[in-house]
Length: 407
Image 1 (tube, one colour):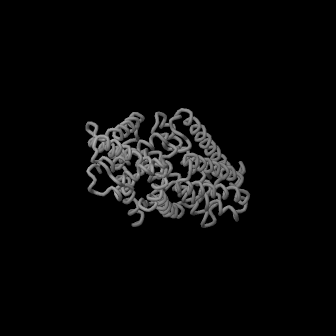
Image 2 (tube, rainbow, N blue to C red; image 1 turned 90 degrees about the horizontal axis):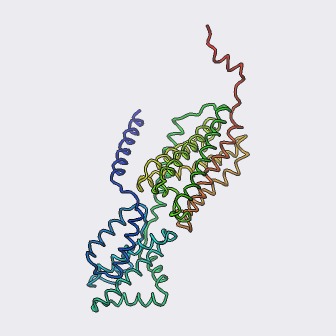
């Protein structure tokens, strides 16, 4: 009882904190904002002493920090280590890499997660500022920046920046850290769900209804996903994640896919708990799949970047662990053994795709779409098998005797 009360209290505090963050977070950038940011960043490159230039730099930096849908990589040490504190125009030069990198990320979706490409674009923007400074201020000469200009003109700048970034710009992989933390949360909650919700008998008619629900959810997800690619051509599917469609004019359509995916996962979890819960891996898999379903729905509720990211950080690792554990449990589960190999290969494919996304491999958008397709396929295979494995319906006469009350 004490544990349950503490869990309830912790849940209330967490929900209140989420609501506060939800109220404070700003929405995604608009097309007009992005165009204006690019124009202002390029203006400052050409004219670092333009009217209201300091205020413009400050406003652009604030926008880059606050906006949730533009990821900008900047490393101050790439310039500060060679420029020093005594350079009279360090403010104009050292701020520019962030602004130019943001403009580059907006103009090149395929490089949105390429740190070296953004670092290079930022330094090149700073060098354009330096060239403009030399025209207006002959005393702005810097031996370090002159050296970078030579490397740029000799096509050696990118290699130099890559080497310097490897030495000076060490950064934690926040996506991986969030995923590991989310996996830990999912495991704890999954164990609690598996313990508190015992399984019950699932009849074949119930399993058949579950199959219809899951197949309908899968069909809806695929149809809406394909339709959004047509309605929102601005989002390049090779590099933009599916969830980013919620920020477009048809965002409500994308929001529905979170709930149908959560419903499909929960339906499969409930059915498995009824017909396959003998092993520890199956019980924990049920709990993790249930937790994953709940947090998938929460990711649809919260569109703001931080809240959506927090929900996804629990949902995705929970789903992966659930598919792995359940697929492994099928190997010695009688009639479930027939799908053991196929479901395990699919689950391992999901794990490989998820790792590739976190390691920033090429085309993360396509990798995420492949991950979602495999999960939908896994759910479809499992729920189809569930109909055969579920207990047969009781005979009509027996059902009538059970329902009849004695006089």
